[in-house]
Length: 113
Image (cartoon, rainbow, N blue to C red):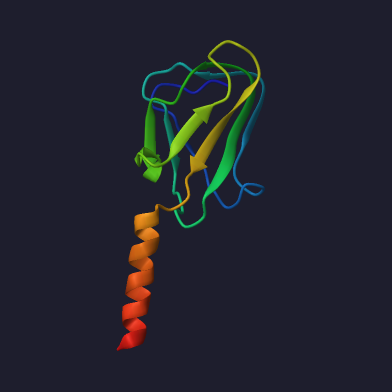
């Protein structure tokens, strides 16, 4: 499967078992310029999402759209280019401790009033 110049893959991250996934029984070619991976991430549900499986890969996505560009989100390729089977995985981390403390403080303050 070959992504052309400026091609986009917009994936839905519903759950790890029910999300969009490309399965390529050959080479996933991401070597074109400005190919884009796009998804909306729910930071309240930390998960790992496999969005592509391949037998071989060339290149990687050049542009991360939506909130995939957020530094907390990782896009991981499980094999090096041209080195055999692998996956493209989106990793959404657990919310930070500071965010949890803030939510707790806001909730407690609302109850006091």
